[in-house]
Image (cartoon, helix red, strand yellow):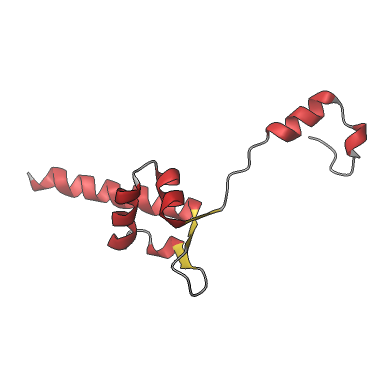
Length: 94
């Protein structure tokens, strides 16, 4: 663990590389493009998911515009839970 009070000039090359390579996951994404990227689906499918109400708890509307703000972790868990329920329903329907 790197001391957060250490000056940047005092870091070793290894410590600096560790800091630069840390990838922080975004906690929020914006719009259908962001939703499609975090779920690994097309923008058309992302639009269907949003309109279906599956991830309503993870979506907030930003201001008066049509832009939406999506909580990444909550959207992923809701999507995976609901798609698993849907798959099980389709299996039992046959």
